[in-house]
Structures are given as structure tokens and as C-alpha cells.
Amino acid sequence: MTTIEKLLAIEAIKTLFARRVRAMDQKDWVLYDTLHAPHAVLKSFSPDQAGLAPLGSHGGQLAAVGKAAILEAIRTLLDGEVKVTTVHHAHTPEIEITSDTTATGIWAMEDMLWWDDDGETQFAHGYGHYYETYEKIDGTWLIASRTIRRLRSDTPPDFFRYMKAG
Amino acid sequence: MTTIEKLLAIEAIKTLFARRVRAMDQKDWVLYDTLHAPHAVLKSFSPDQAGLAPLGSHGGQLAAVGKAAILEAIRTLLDGEVKVTTVHHAHTPEIEITSDTTATGIWAMEDMLWWDDDGETQFAHGYGHYYETYEKIDGTWLIASRTIRRLRSDTPPDFFRYMKAG
Amino acid sequence: MTTIEKLLAIEAIKTLFARRVRAMDQKDWVLYDTLHAPHAVLKSFSPDQAGLAPLGSHGGQLAAVGKAAILEAIRTLLDGEVKVTTVHHAHTPEIEITSDTTATGIWAMEDMLWWDDDGETQFAHGYGHYYETYEKIDGTWLIASRTIRRLRSDTPPDFFRYMKAG
Image 1: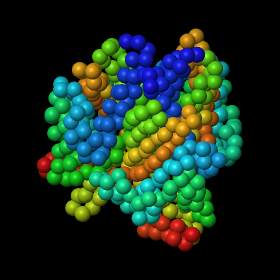
Image 2: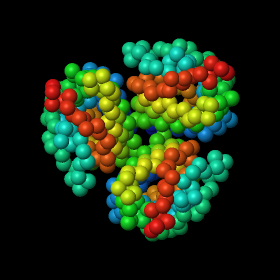
Image 3: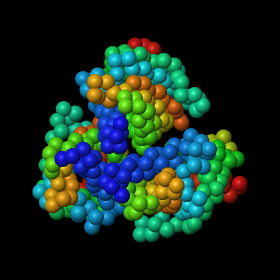
Image 4: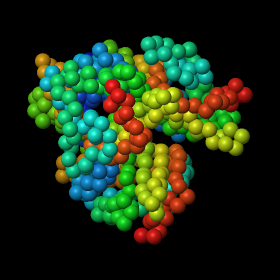
């Protein structure tokens, strides 16, 4: 890859990431569906991960495998029976192009979620870093995997009650 | 435009945007005055837009036309009779160069406003996306239009009382 | 410097900055130790600067000189006797390459600090801009100086009590 191609790839990956968080927050599931690789893997997403993930491990439980499953998991969580207003902001990317068709990225992140529980607004607020990998397939950069390493989460007592009920 | 020119234009537009929000928050109106195109259009700024803008329309009422009117509108709102401390943070730009002299940008955003109302600190907190267009005039990228699409706004009851009084 | 080299330098500096705030928030002091120039200067860091810095001056008191002293100052503040959970988010960089081996940067920033004081969680929340300079030494961009110009700080009454006790 030439230097220019590398710079172009970095900008493409930043834009890809931007579309993912915007699609999620605007609940644009048509756009969301175009951003992951077919075999993409999502970790650190299950209710058990609502607290602090151990800083030493980027692991987390497997939440979804495959772009269709990832879309379904996110859509059910945020735009299912309970409508969750979300704001995901991400900052200061560290993108590394690891080959002509693969790359990694680390993003500082903050997420805010508001939803209604029996007439009362609930609010959850988290901080951490996304660790992602990317793949270029048929000329387009796509998200291949994502996990979160949390710094802190402030959640109401029944954070995932609506999920268990679902 | 060559690939390098495109990358340069994207970086120039990101810096232009950065200067606009910094000038506003630091109340540097001399800098602010250099950032918009002469015929720039600002939408979604009026008090009526303090609530959630309909997600389907990027519209919003016309707030100001022309760079002098935009500067005047912002300066009056934030640095007029009532002094408003503001923090505008914006994230994950999606910049698209649409011709040699035009571009579009989407930015995730968050704004925080603090002001004094009869000795009590008021606070407003909003979230959404800026939708902007840019134009290159005499070799310099400038902001040609801006609107906001809100995800959520938390505002005190009398959010714009000071404006009506103005 | 060619245009491509300039774009590469800007991306390298953005990544350098990203590593600095991530290393601080993840308390990765090994990584932190690699990011400043040997003679780097840190201003605006002492307890006296917890309030609003005068907007007109980027000055602030000298907090630490030399990369070892900067690391020691930050580590003692955040990861010493009192463990402080921190989230530093920074936005919309304005990077200017001023020569083959020097550059400047302005970043909008927000910092959040949580710590325990006699069993009670304390929280400080600040907003402002980092003003940094960078130097390229032996082919690697490093942070040469940093100061903060605050827009607002919300701190508990005894913000730096634990420091005085240290």
C-alpha cells in the first residue's frame, strides 16, 4: 500500500465508524446493516458486561456473530419493545493499517441511554474504549469485530430489567 | 481533484469546523467572523427548535442568512445582555467532497450552556448531529450552511426567557 | 515537507495525542512514558489551576518539566495513595505543522474525575482546550509542551484535599 492509500484507508475507516454510531443513535437500521463484515463478531455486549470489564482483558462474552445477528441484537436492545434514546460519542481514534485489507482501531467512547420504565425516565452513562478490527472486502472497509473495555459505568439498579422481560 | 488534494480538503474542513466551535465557546468573535461564506445559511437555531427536531427532516426554521447575520445571531444569544458559558463538542465527522469547491459534513454533537437567571445557574444540555455544507472560495474552505438534527435536549423550563426579554 | 508528509505528520500527531489520554485513563504508565519529549513542559496542572484559568492567558503555573517529572506528577495525582478514575475526552484538533520537526495543536477537551473521600464518591468535571506543541525527534513525533485554557470547572469543595494530604 502506498502512503496515500494508507491515509485514504484511515479516513475511510474513520467515516465507517462514524456511520455506525450515527446509524445506531438515529436508529437508521438500513444504514447500520451496510457497515459490518458478513462474519463480524461483537463481544462485551451482554447484560453481564454492564459493569466494569476487567481492564486487563479485552474479552467479554460473545454477544453476536454475523452482521445479521449484530443488527438484530442492537435493534432489539434499543428499538424493540422498549425505545431507548441513545447518544454514542467516540474520540481520538488510533487506526493502524495492518495489511492491504486489515486494520485495527481504538476509540475513546462515551454512551448515554435514556428509556422509560413505568413512567419514569431511566438513565445509564458509560465510559471506555472500543477495540475494533476492520476488513476491506470488495474494495470497501467494513467492521470485522468490536469489543468494549469500560472505565466506568453508572447505571440504574434495574439497568437490564427490560431486556430480561423481553 | 487528486487523491492528495481530497485528503487535504478533508483536513482543512475539519480544522475549519474546529475553529468555529472553539471561536464560539471562547467568544472569539474576530475568529468566528472569518469562517462562514458570505451567503451562508443557518437553520435550526431559533427558540422553537430547542426541543427535538423531527428526525425525518433536517429542516428547521431559517435562523440567519449571511455571515454577518449569523455572527450577530450567535453573539447576541451567547454574549449579549446575558452571558452564556458554552461548551460545544463535536465528533466523528463524515466529510464528503462533492466537487472541487463543495463538500458536505455530518458531525455528532453535544452542547452545554450555563447562564445566570436571577442569581440561579441555569443549564441546558443537548445532543444531535450537525449537517453542514462547505464551499471553497478564493482557495479557502468556508461553512456554507448548517442545521442541527436533535436526538435529545434537556432544558430548564424558561430556556429562552432571556431571549424573549432581549 | 511534501503535502503527503504533512498529512502523515498530522495523523501521527493525532494518534500520539490519542495514546496520551488513553494511557492516562487506563493508567498505562509504560505507554505514557513513551509519549513526551525528554525536555517536555507541562503547565496549568497545579491545584491552583483547578478553577477557571484566565481566558486571555494560556499561561498557568509551571507544573512539571521533563518527561520523567510529568509522568511522576500525573501518576501521583491519579494513581497514588488515592486512586482516581479519569475520563479525558478531546475533540476537533487544529494541528499546524510549523516546520519539518515542529507542530502545534489545539484540542477541545473535557475531563471527569471520580475518587473516594472517606467513603463518599467525589466528582470533578472540567471543560476547556489543550494547547500543545510537538517535536519530531529521531523520526518520532512527541509532545513537547501542554497547557490548558479552561472554559468551566465544576469541582467539589475539597477538590485537591487528597493532594495536600499526600
